Length: 155
Image 1 (cartoon, one colour):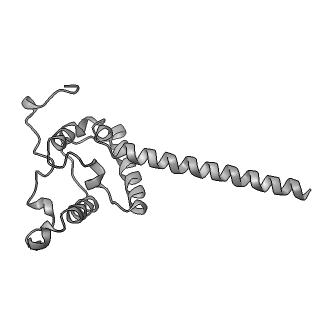
Image 2 (cartoon, helix red, strand yellow):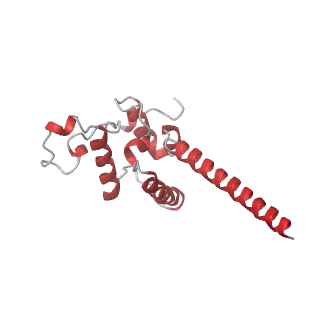
Image 3 (cartoon, rainbow, N blue to C red):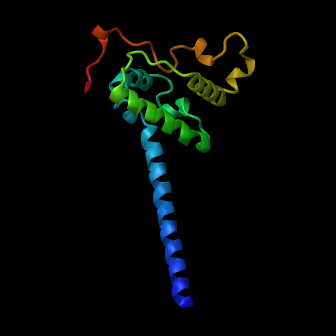
């Protein structure tokens, strides 16, 4: 009887380990996929934003290098909340042509600017404006092109 209990315990531990590996792998794969410009541009409203990013000096960065926390324990809940909101708005709500950042997103983007450009900012007075992008408004996204000049999907 003890051998059966011991075997069952090992079987349960094995299946729990397999489940953890599957969950971890699934999370890692989905985090990488949802960080990509291809994923972000799958929503119509993001097409121009992604295009302007692709020709900027920051084109080698993923969207979430700037737009999400880098700490994984903060990044996962942030992306889950933002993703759920985006899915809801794109499914049931009014999709605005102009994307407005929340205060939380502004803080995250600003902190990510400071993290990457820390040495540059040593000689910059940051008390004039609240956020880096208050002065650097078109980095790395340029202003949207007028409708008559925009590219059509698939070009």
